[in-house]
Amino acid sequence: MKKHKSYGFTVVELIVVIVVIAVLTSITAIAYRSTQADSRDKKRIADAMILKSAIDEYYADNGAYPRLTTCEYNSGAECVSGQVWTLLQGQGYLERIPMPDLATTHHTVGVNRAPGGKAYYLYASNNSTNYQVYVPLESGDCKFGKNIIASYWSSVKTCDF
Image (spheres, rainbow, N blue to C red):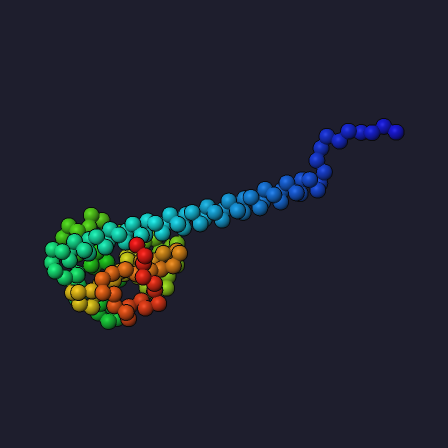
């Protein structure tokens, strides 16, 4: 009896190779999405630092944190439509107004869309000695500020930057 040499792969070998490729592709896709989310969060944190710097400069020049009567939303202290950022930009403290990409953001507060569908970082101040800014992050939202108002966004952690 003559033995024939086999030059191809068996069905089992092909299935094993396909499964290994599928697992590697899945791991790569998950790592890629995680990297993208981290990148978007880093951009939002950089935006928040720009806003913090502008607020601090305003305070240094004026002795008070920005507060506008036109920012009334519920309690009269929150700005959701970007009026504070527009004020800071108009006075030269901001070159541009940073806006978070809310399509990819996890929200706990939720309503920070201005008319026209634009999104702004939320700002709250109930007097000239305190303020806080809400930063929507995919890794979990946070807030920063000076003399933070406990009742505003109470379930949101304080940013560690």
